[in-house]
Length: 171
Image (cartoon, rainbow, N blue to C red; front, side, top):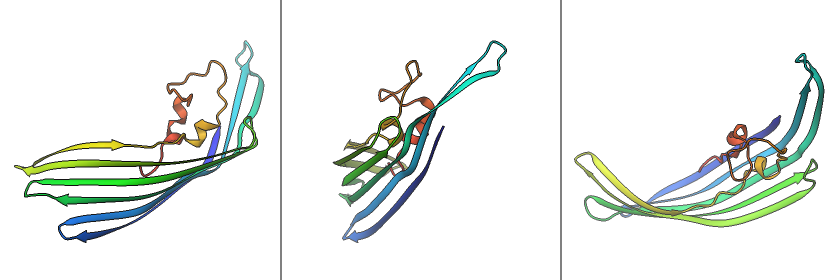
């Protein structure tokens, strides 16, 4: 059983610079008041609940990601444009209590991209892009107690049903 509150705030500004377009902004998102319980239920031969065990995996955790970004898109000729951008992120997590005890982490990283777009030519455009990204662990998966035998489909041990908690808004 998992409960939490997610939040996201994004603000940006655009400014024309000659024929180019410049954009800069702030992206703030995260998860607060995360609580995760591992609940094991044992049934008897008649199919009735024989016992139930509840363990607090995560008592109270949060993750906050603050990112600043800037990008520019420059037309080069009639049917070619070049664009590029940088983003810096700082991600802070905190866990209090539960199976993993008190822990804090903080990570910072840069990401960016460069792209070239040809078109439109007869209603068709093509873009080639190179990028470097940064994706921190989601807080649900970072401090999740996985029981032996739990089925996962991710290298980090996140269960399939936790996927929605591992997505990061604004990416």
